[in-house]
Amino acid sequence: MQNHIHRISVFLLLIAAGCASNHPVVGAWGRPGLAPQRTDKIALTARPNPNDADAQLGRMLVPELQAAGFVMVPVEEADYLLAYAVEDDATVERGHKTVLAPSKPAFNHPQTTQQIVDQNLARRQPENLRVPTTYVDERQGIRLYLYTNPKTHSGKFNLAWSGCIDAGEKVSAEREPLLIRTLLGYFGKAYNGTVDLNHPQPSK
Image (cartoon, rainbow, N blue to C red):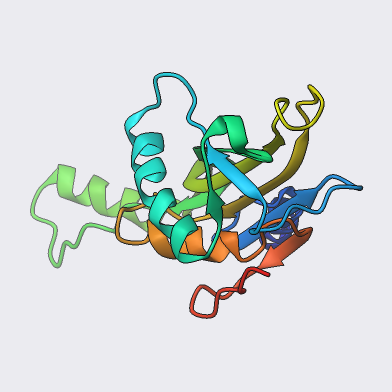
């Protein structure tokens, strides 16, 4: 019972964090006073020396942005700069597991002194043991960062919006477009909760 309560507590904390759950969760935040729209001019930026996961995300992000009607332009013309990353998340949970005691040896008719001794010892069967153990739950998520472009915002470089969707597992190439599409549905919005991947929110 105590372990069950612990798991519920961990789950609620992960939802609050916005990007860590066994179920699809979106965590999105927007800076007050800024309301970026898909009609704003956006330039996609990549961090230097991206790893394989980030490079793959960048390749898949471009067609999804275009299909959703985002206005993509060079950095010099952009209102906002959109950065992206595949984030790793690992949750460690500690609990107990039951180790079964060895079964009793069967001696129908003891023939030797050792068999008689073994049979007497078997009557004092040890109880099952509960030993501490650690579970590590590894997941990945996709995060987008939207910054104001200093070239078009009077030299100001501020985080305007950030959104993350967890995959509940490793981000696969087959599932990545759907995750991106779902997250883009919350572009420019503030949201924290579970989502239905089969019915992504439309961008407005």
